[in-house]
Amino acid sequence: MSTATQSERVALTGNEAAATAMRQINPDVVAAYPITPQTEIVQMFSNFVADGDVHTEFVRVESEHSAMSAVIASAASGARSMTATSANGLALMWEMLYIAASYRMPIVMPVVNRALSGPINIHCDHSDSMGARDSGWIQLYSENAQEAYDNIIQAVRIGEHPDVRLPVMVCQDGFIISHAMDNLYVLPDEDVQAFIGEGGGQEHSLLDVDNPATFGPLDLQNWYFEHKRQQVEGMKNAHRVIPEVAREFADVSGRSYDFFEEYRTEDADVVVVVLGSTAGTAKDVVDAMRADGHKVGLVKIRVFRPLPADKLVESLLSRSAVAIMDRSDTFSSAGGPVYHAVRHALYDVDERPPVSNYIYGLGGRDIRPSQIRRVFEETLEVARTGQRSRSISYLGVRE
Amino acid sequence: MEDILEVRWHGRGGQGAKTAANLLAEAASAAGQYIQAFPEYGPERMGAPVASFNRISSRVIRIRSAVEEPDVVVVLDASLVHSVDITDGLPDDGAIIVNTDKEPHEMREELSLEGRQVFTVDANSIAMDTIGRPIPNTPMLGAVVRATDILDYESFLSIMKQELEKKFGSRPEIVEGNIQAIERAYEEVRSE
Image (cartoon, rainbow over all chains, first blue to last red; front, top):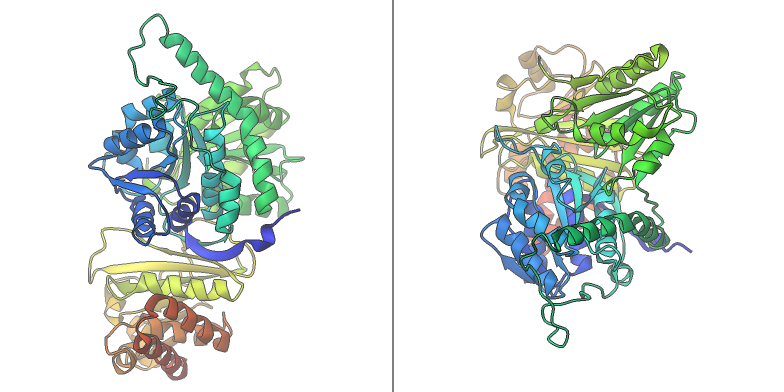
């Protein structure tokens, strides 16, 4: 059934894995501007273009705002379109992010997570993509180079599905994943091509002169609301499409994906929720604590937009206590973005567990197993006492 | 985690500390091991102290934290010994491998180091003889394989040859020089 044996085990960095996925996708258009730590992806991709390994029209633009504008236009004309960015580059795309989503352009964009300035910092946190969580893009988060690679390939199918038609960000942690060499399995080029299919083409295309369509008209009180409501419907449909695409991908790759991964949660009293590379470290901590007899488990969120709220509730409602780890802050003084989302999802459950929040790793601050162990231990204590409070802690910071 | 070998490379910008970690990882990966290789990114520039890291294990490596207690420290430039805390976090049973023309006991005295295994090899001279440039990273790989036994030497050599041919296929003299450098460092590294 599985053709996973044809996969080649290689040693690549997260950026190399992303560039490899882009080469195998062979998009019609890539428009990009360099920014650390993403630069390598489009630098390597430009080599593929120069070497004739892809047929892509590579557009060297003068800013990320232009990069996003260019791929919106190319996607509108029916071309499969990609770009990649990080941090301030993503911030500079901001107004165009919303436009890409509202025009329903299935652009796939690797985002190499980096702290937003200021102060200026090139290292990982999730302030860039979390800031864009309400822009209407689907967001997938990756634990390692393998997941970054697999998510980029699946993103093409998710975004282009006729019932979804939305842009997709595929996030990987800057430097921790993007610049770290890691083992992964790479599919044969033809398997990737077969999986993603022809696609790209729009139901309505700028270049389809027989069926003329308008993109970007003025849309005032009379219709704007209806178009935004339809956009929500696309995101709702993604709840159905994401697992469908994952199942097909599992047939090709032998690797399974879901909205989130549950690690040793079956009988867990305490569950920690995390996304990105920290999940890997946290799995080691779960194993160590299980060996000491603690009933602990981990939920690693892969799909943050759309938010798998019902499924998260199902996974978390029977726990004695839950802790959410956020690698960015909302500056609401009421907790981080993942905390807000998960805690909110649990509101309708009468027997909901206490949920506390740990904000960690801003600007690339290292997160150690001992710190994650502390999160579990404190949450076990909350489980014992049943104490409820809006507990928001900052982990590994001088204060 | 006990079943993961952790290596920290110290060098100066331009000496190939990042490349050395990548090459060791690629060789270990090709030999069937699980690997990580990552550099420490700061405001690096030519000549400034830099570091890079490896994790090597027979099982999947999930941890993504910094390497704090390396089993092996490799020093590509002996002048770093007095400006960087190169033994930081090195456990009592750890090993340190220094590119220097000094004997291991001299390096031990210079570092005021007790316990640990101290290895020295004159990788600069080896690199000048074999590659023609003072690039110590590939000979130091030979020393690391000798000092750690993490890889079978013969298969390491053949993998390195393949990797170097991929990178320098059009210049066989570079491939040959680097292989000779690895072989000589493997033979010449001394320990106490």
